[in-house]
Image 1: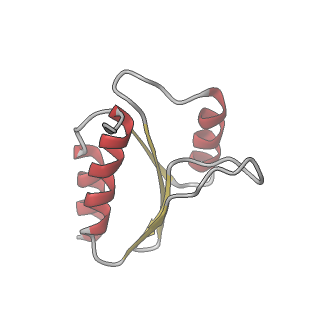
Image 2: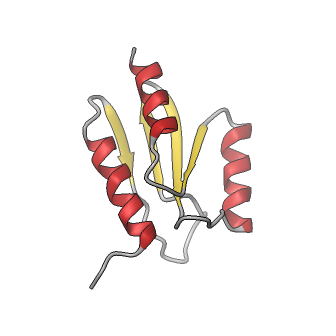
Image 3: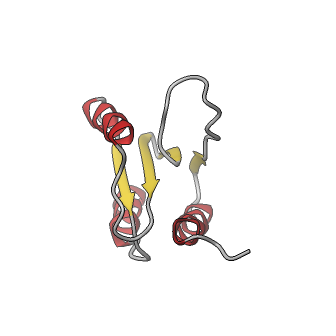
Length: 98
């Protein structure tokens, strides 16, 4: 079975994150229980981040937008990635990593 457009983006994000030393992340599995979150949740050099991947042209749902707002208010960094362009995430990782 062919990978969905979102799955292809997730694969690229995962590959990038796996290459970064001292970075912790996980991909929560939605189960219908507990609080909703985004596709990736992690910490890099003491900084909390989260990533929501979308198929090209798609946008976060209303619930995901609420989660994004909560993370921003708490001081976390959020990336919404809907293409092969990972430059914003790469730039942030480089900036934080020194």
